[in-house]
Length: 188
Image (cartoon, rainbow, N blue to C red):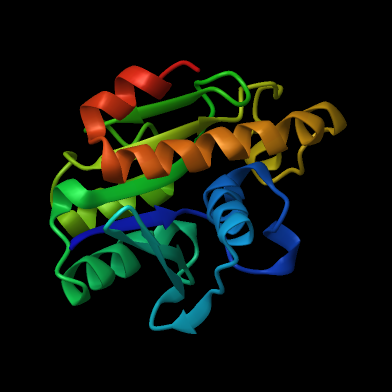
C-alpha cells in the first residue's frame, strides 16, 4: 500500500484558527470533516489517517508552531517510512491571488518561516508543496498582521469551494501522481 504524508502548516491555538496563515490546517480539517475522520494528538502534532483508492494518507497538523514545522515533518516521514516524493506540504502563499492553488515539486522558501525550517530539517528544497494563494492585499510593513489576520467576508464566502478543490488536489496527488496533478490543478 502506498503511503503519503500530507502536512498542513499552521499555528496551534484558537486565536490562529481562522487566519490566512492557517490555511494548511483548514484544508486538512475540511478533508477530515468531509470524510468523517478524527484527529488524534500524538507526538509533534495532530494526526489522522485517510484511506482512499488503495492509498494511505497520513494527515499531519504540526503542534510545533509554524517556524518549527520541520521537526514534525521529519519525525513523521521517518516514523511512517514515507519516501520524500510522497510528502506534500500545504502552505499559504502571498504571491498568489486569493484561492489560486499551485503544486510545485521544489523551490525556495519564499520567506515563509515554516518552509524555511522544513528545508533546514530535510536538507533539501526538493519536496512537494501545495501553495494556497492568500494574495498580498496589505500595506507596507503590515505583512505579519495580514497573514495572521482573519479572512474577509468575501474570502469566507469563496473559501468552501476552494477547500473542496484543495481536497481534490490531495486525492489526485496520491492517485494520479504529482505531474498529472500539477497539469490538472495549477492555476485553477
